[in-house]
Length: 355
Ligand code: KG4
Ligand code: ZN
Picture 1: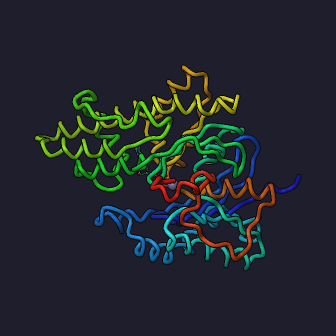
Picture 2 (picture 1 turned 90 degrees about the vertical axis):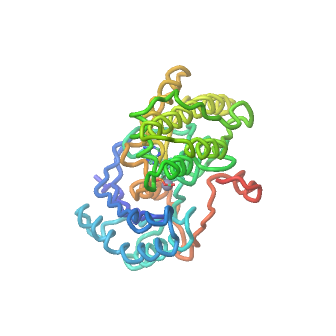
Picture 3 (picture 1 turned 180 degrees about the vertical axis):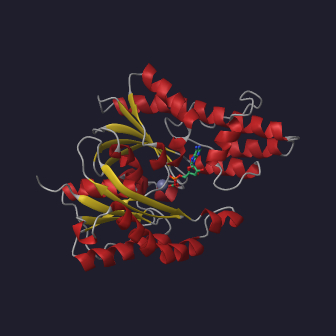
């Protein structure tokens, strides 16, 4: 039997240096032979956000070590790799450059193809590692920098149905956490806090809930939280605010996803729904969207919890799909810090819409 393709994935678009080795398998049985992630959390926490220069320096220091670790753990020899897949955008240009240049050097030294991967496509295909996933599907991508509804029609074929007009959802979680005095990144901690609070204590706004189709907005929510935190008297009220925020987000996503389902069904019959990105690890959001999917007869698919946040296995997954179609890239491929998944996003770039 022919050897199943083996791909090395590399990720350095923001504050995680990651390398993973993936081997092809049929129908959601792709094997993760190794998946190493080194987070720069400790470097950036005192600044309350990612400092690009420090991030790039740390990627430079670690990328060869992390890659070696991934290869050792996978028990794969470097010459047995079939291709090197690497994130080439979107992200911080100084960080993307480190991973991309490293991947180019490695690919040319072992004489194997280079595959440039869009980080967002990595999230979009992340459930494919462990689940059977067929095109087309509706994708809700919720991460620290992106919040979008997309119709996924095939590899590299995306149509955007809606996006945030201001903050990304992960950003809204992180900013709320900061206002509550919680460390960056605050998303997972807000979820923990919310379990100890009263979800109905504070009434928070749901911006553009009845307009804008399945576009979303979270900036007004942040302003309301800022106002409330000024009058918070004790720890319990912090838990209550986190719980009320979590409930509001669940309700916003429930309503907006209902609209996105309708939009998606105008052009598609297959009722498949994928929720991916760092915020897709949130259990409250998962449960709310599972219930909606049951009501509307959609099949809902999530990545494994440990594949929601940034990782290189999802980059290798896209690499594998592209490898099978022989979609290779030249060694002069440029990093693209604003690489959008769909043409509409490029069109809207100047209009202040994040993609
Ligand atoms: O996909 P990701 O790792 O990085 C980007 O590509 O942006 O997403 C990171 C974001 C952060 O904002 C983090 O706070 C959020 O995902 N996040 C969560 C949870 N886990 C991570 N937000 C809410 N609940 C969680 N359990
Ligand atoms: Zn990401």
